[in-house]
Image (cartoon, rainbow, N blue to C red; front, side, top):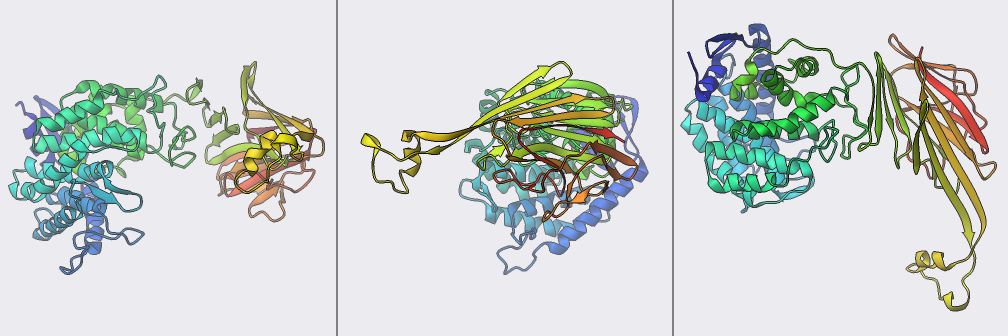
Length: 561
């Protein structure tokens, strides 16, 4: 038996145990996993329906409040997405439920009322009459409408038609804010075009695609948003490749997923230090990559993608996606191990990445303070940096980076001075407006120099860090070793006035989380001035400090205990 895509889509909606594709038997998700997934989806839908406003007199009817008690188009789209997943899946307790159909009507009505004349919606927390935020909403509404189309449910297609067509017009005319918005927008347009084909929509997609997909040689998109927007871009490109029949759009997805095989810590967390977006230095997993990972693991028979996918399932499986894309119900390839012993340099991202089994590290460089992030299982150093009290601007922000035998070397030179009175032709009354402009015209005196150096090299079980500062004497300096809270720190003294701040005066500290131990030292603490004026805020909720005065030089190690 040979099935076309439409027949595959219908079969995907009712298959609990198997798919028959091209005569070959292909096991879908197990019945047990699928039943559990549907039950979880039903539970989430029930919670959404409880919160959905049904009062016919309310301007918010059809939506649900978010954590800020705002009623948004995004909530109505989410209701539609969940409703459709349950309404069209035969294992759902809500299958073909009249109550669910009525909830979809309510949500659709809210969306139409929320649309601007241009066809767009608002993101109430920041963006208004926003084409890209309309696209994020269309991703979910479009899936709901497409599931209705697949199941020959013209009533629901018509229910969502006007909103989607107007949204398609707004997105086809509208602009964007950020690089990823281009592909988010194009994917939404591809969804609208699949339902209501229009040449102008495809032309607009081609306009954006003419700019080229922004994947670099390190496998990162412009924003390098490893924890959030990479996943959105990958999903958008897979959707476009599928709905527009353009398999070449899978190439950048493949490049990004290949890059990510080196950017996952052993506990499943993603390296986010390179991101230029809000996920920078935040704890993230591969959850936003779920759809692209499952699609590409099956499409490419790639066991490494399957390995990255495994920790996400069944938690991150999306029931509506299984119904819309039955391809992803096919068997996954056998997982293949990810790289776990390597040193890789990323010049564009200004990062060196190191794995030695359980030891997983990121060394950031460039114009930011060098940040050594080190995972030893669940014991994590979230960053190392230092600052001195040098004129209130003494945080180490290296200007020179050099690869030397055994490790990286960083250097920065600073100068501080005082300013003399204006005189002669430069003498003008000083006001608030011209004070800053007057400084370059003033002679300086009492000049003070400062030279910072830092070196980081690998050891057998971790890293050795050397920090030096000289040029102006008796300047207090503090090194911060930021530890992820949750463990037990021993061999330290409380830092006065700093919650969860500790001084390592001498010897070695141990930081223990479960069975994972880090050994840090030797210590040095000549004073307790840890919150140095002009330095950035603390990196985490638990900080270990080493302190001293210039001229300063100290070498310490962080190793698996």
